[in-house]
Image (cartoon, rainbow, N blue to C red; front, top):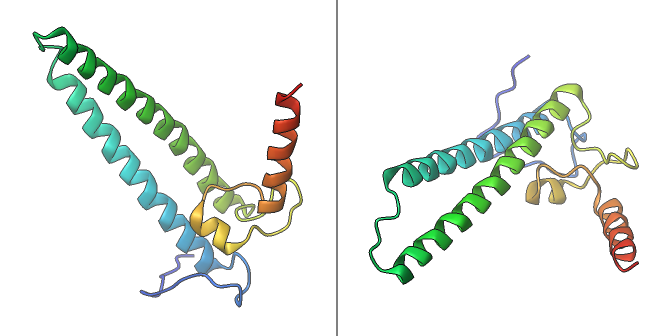
Length: 138
């Protein structure tokens, strides 16, 4: 079954949670985000392949090396983000998308709009972060 999104569609709390239109909205949002990350990754690869370190000045060379290291760390974070996007796409397919992995309750639409890869409700995420902080201090 294919769903055509109305042009100005925005999910709202007034409709059935994760109905077909809402799922399609988030699926498209995730696909656009994924495509943008892949495009940026391709640009990085091209940039890195274009030139070796040709800077004659040692300070310029060090600066260029630091820029590359930062770029590679950013791309690594984006690679991990793409994996999370792919996992969210699978959750849309299996019907678990939008529901908290801990409580099974719906994740708020505002949270999903801001972080479409969210797997925890805000309350569960805050509990998780509090536990992390207390264990880190040990």
